[in-house]
Amino acid sequence: VFNDTVASIEDLTVNSFDATQSSGSFRPIFKGDHVLFNGSNDFLTMGTAISKMPTRTVFCVFEMVSSGLNQRIYSERDSGGSAAHSGLELIAFSSSGKYRSAYGDGVNYRFTDSSTSSSTSKMLFTEKFSTSSGFLTTMQIDGIDETETDAGFGGTATSIGGTAYNLSLGRTGEDTGGYANYKLYAFLVYDTELSDGDRTSVNNFLISEFGL
Image (cartoon, rainbow, N blue to C red; front, side, top):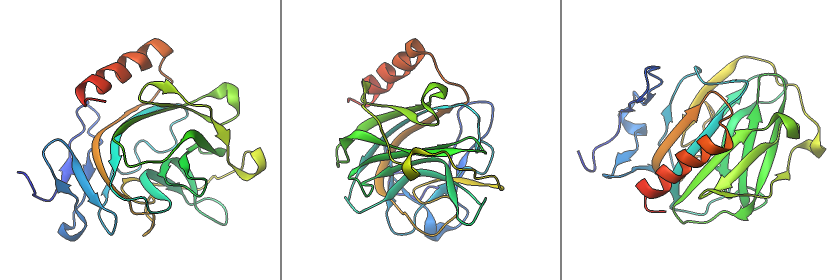
């Protein structure tokens, strides 16, 4: 129902990786064609089932409402080492002003910055892990290739180990921070590196479906 809180978003595959929120106080709001996260305490969690996938391709259609620093559209955090490191993450309005992605396979991770600056426009962000570029993610915005920049620890891969945290929509994994004020239209995760042709097909469908 329009303007109701969202307790869950159903996974439309057979895997049942639903995004859920048991507490009514932390639920985002259903707005018809999107779910609105308030940037204060709203988030949904998808558990650990898709954490640490060795390869993956992610599609996310969203629109930022505010331009606050380091907002997490989606985020999975790992407890290895002396600090929690990202296994899968997309940050809007990062410290560089760009979109920042993190990829981790359970052993190594890297941060990657987009060439496009963060904005409050509705957009399709596509990323996939590229084994040929040393743990950097390959990015597209609205189906157009980005020129990525290595933004992680002087370009060296870092061991993360540890136990996977939940993947969250709207905040930093299981941490109480990084809340994002945004509209989420679609979120798709494939457990493989899609071919360029398949990635283009999904991009074109989402671009048409959401009027991008």
